[in-house]
Image (cartoon, rainbow, N blue to C red; front, top):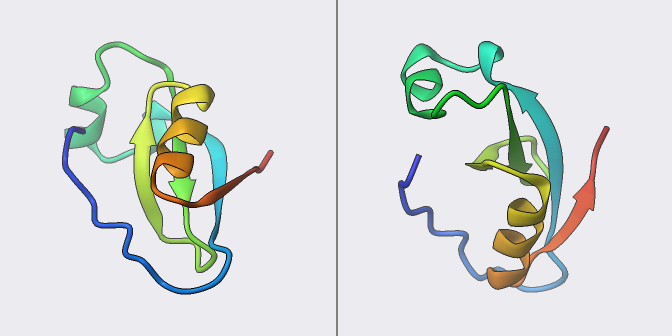
Length: 75
């Protein structure tokens, strides 16, 4: 879960979507790294590709903003 991802630097406003994910829905290798958490937060690009998983919503928003992305909450 500590794998670096190159978010790239495309032009224009880049929106990413933040949504909660049940750890039980993730692959077993990811579940093993979740440290007993039951829920993680995923950051997805506009095409739906998962860019990152983090332990809480605040971290997801911080991660997005640190990479010059505009996070939007998804329910």
